[in-house]
Image (cartoon, rainbow, N blue to C red; front, side):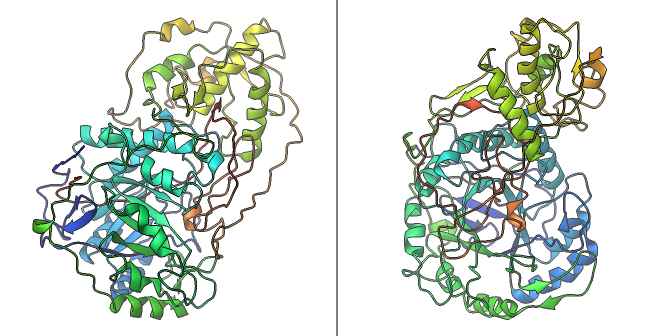
Length: 586
């Protein structure tokens, strides 16, 4: 199959301060000159001194002025930004970056909302937040694209999460088409040796072009110190992309063992070893954080900047490379999407992608609860999430939970699996409450010390049976809460409550620690920029840390991907792409 699209983006007709880009086949091109384009980038997420949540370097005008001059001195043409607040105004920094010729690759999730590795889901709240970020940034001509998932699947037992990330790519691309926004959306992996090849194929396979990633990124730390192209296995790193149908790039590199870093991999990334297959890369990272990967020391709102030893090395290495690829006029590839990897004990995903969430369906569901999750519950709280998961695992032995179950191998997804954690949990605890004849004290979650609202006159769930379709193309709801309802909704839990169940004493569930075993020599701290606040699953801490750099080397798991999937809103990932007046997938 050969797919060729040439579409104008939303900002066409504006005066560009930066040349638009074209994605054609496996390469990126400058639309003005026709020359092949390579990202010479750096990861950018200064954290020191920032008190806002989410952290947002693109609203720090002092920091932007300070750092853009350094970007120009370094000779970079792009930054990758992991976390922003879409409700803020970014005009100053984005326009200043544009005038400096700097493209921005932007992650869609934040530490407050993302697809989990463990017990993943793609729901109406996440879709709404992703839409809001697209709306906030698609107006800027130098946005290079969006990353929908960053290292979400990082072990065999977390591969089911890939299906939900793929669904998010499909739906956000459908939304952008409806809004006449043409920006690429991609995925980034963590270079895990056990699962990287099926991941690479999976995000480039299938008959639905909307569900395919528009580019693919790799966060890799396999090249350490005075190594070489073959000695570091960089040759094996790029081998799966020899006939890939979309561009790929190295979205993080720069092993920091030892320090200072020689950064010799830059010669291969932009030289004869890789320039025919790669579209460049992004050094991790600009600002020095506790993991010691930075090339400068800066603080939020402070104009001062201190250059660290790696700064001059990075600048020198970039100055010594000048890749020359093909011209777009002489590039006519015949590339096809990949074949989908078959499900196995090492790849717990089939061909069926989860359905698009339906806001109307989930809002209807919210009117049927007799027992409701309280507003104090936080899906981002690891302890609360584990307590809730354990409770549901228990009561699902006595009530029907099929409406929220998912099985990524069989490709079966419950009717309400696209609803929020609050809605899915409320459905199940309501069924248990009804089974107990709504007796006093039976509307609760064992271990959560909250008062659970009840409703003596809920609507019948049969009223939701004829609601179909999805919400992928609809406008976002500005005031949607984490429970999936608007603040003034008549189905809000507080508005629905007619009486309350007695509170229960909190259990002794403790927050499990997170440990990672890197598969490469160096591993970044789980608190670095691209971790984006990863969390353990509702049932287990395994794979909870979004380690951003080296992958967790875990053995194959035969765990069934069928689970009571509630999801959570902590960040994993995202990859960016390229903003252009023309976007071509071929």
